[in-house]
Amino acid sequence: MLTAACASSGATPRPFPTPGVSTAPVPGSSAAAPSTDEAPPAQPAEATLIDTALGLRGAAYRNGGSDPNGFDCSGFTQYVFAQHGITLPRDTREQFQVGEKVKLKDVKTGDLVFFHTVATGVSHVGIALNDDEFVHAPSTAGVVRVEHLSSAYWSKRFIAARRVTPAELAATPLPFPGATRLSRSAD
Image 1 (cartoon, one colour):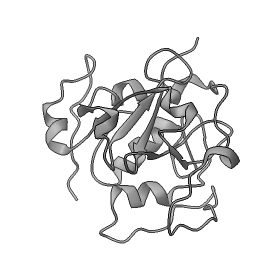
Image 2: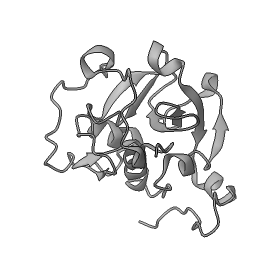
Image 3: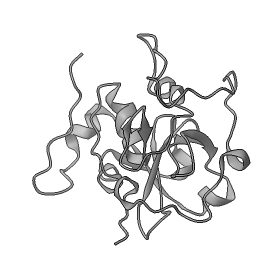
């Protein structure tokens, strides 16, 4: 059975962009990717959500993965936001229910960006770096990397973006019976 969430589908969309073809370099970044068997580099206390996400570039894709040893798309976004005290649901479809819906022309740094890749509806998520780049854990053949929203592959699969802030999380209805309220953890 094919599901819409990358965390549980195990399917690799075709044709999925390959690392050597559609990765976007980030100015000032090193080309070396961190080893997948090591923890991500320590971030300074003032590290931003984007610093955390970019620090994980090169981490391997792992279906169901939600830590630096391997991520799937929703595990990656959940992990990055958790490092900054924001709890997201684990599933891509559930993440699509939180925050405020944002049109492509209004996407800002830190917004979640959603795509349809393996099934109709939301099946993939990443984090916007700016109005045209996003970072994500793409597929079983890839690693966490940066790509362009305007690329031929991603632009035709874009569904919407969601802006997640603590105030919006408090006002967001629970996505399904039995769900727990999203919260900002205390540091």
